Amino acid sequence: MFIGHFAVGYASKKWAPDVSLAVLLAAPLLADILWPAFLLLDIEHVRITPGWTAVNALDLHDYPWSHSMLTLLAWGVLFGALVARAAGRRAGLVVFLGVLSHWLLDWVTHKYDMPLWPGGPESGLYLWRSRAATWVVELALYAAGVWVWLRSTRARNRKGAVGAWVFIVLMLVFYLADRGAPPPSVRVIGISAILATAVLLAFAWWLDRHREAA
Image (cartoon, rainbow, N blue to C red):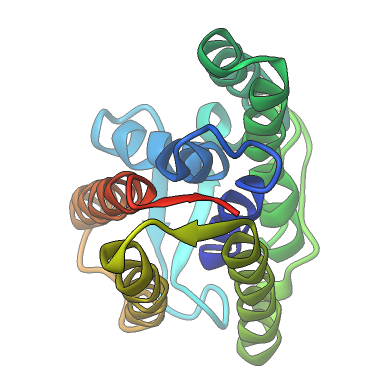
């Protein structure tokens, strides 16, 4: 799951209008923000195995600290508490649920590798066995999230109007680019994921300054 996580962040704006879109996107992406950093620090590990699934070549055999249900609960409580202090309990709850949503969406897509806790049982519905089904589900989620966001906000100015569609299309470009050839190394995975996420969240932060609650 990639672009489907962004859908959760988009839709969250409806229930937390005073929280920056960058923060709301960071919540469902938190596991994938931690994961490349943990790869580079040799805390978690991945094998590049062409043909591992129909969608990507990543054998995600060791990522309990960023992706298990228990640790995501803990990360969600921490992130939600920080947001609650700044923007209120409701915003904190939205962010907490956003963090936790990552496990559920990945459980639907991944190949039997989503741990309940570090060292615990792993499972997954393995949507990634089918490239077509994965694209249909993810793009449908993305479209729904975008629709809720556009209905819940409006542009303050031309930057907010044009920037919204640039951001929507940019996300699709990143998604399609990620469906290409297997990455050459784990280091490339870590660095590229960190840079791509930083660019998208910075854009989201800028864009949110030019839009307001509808």
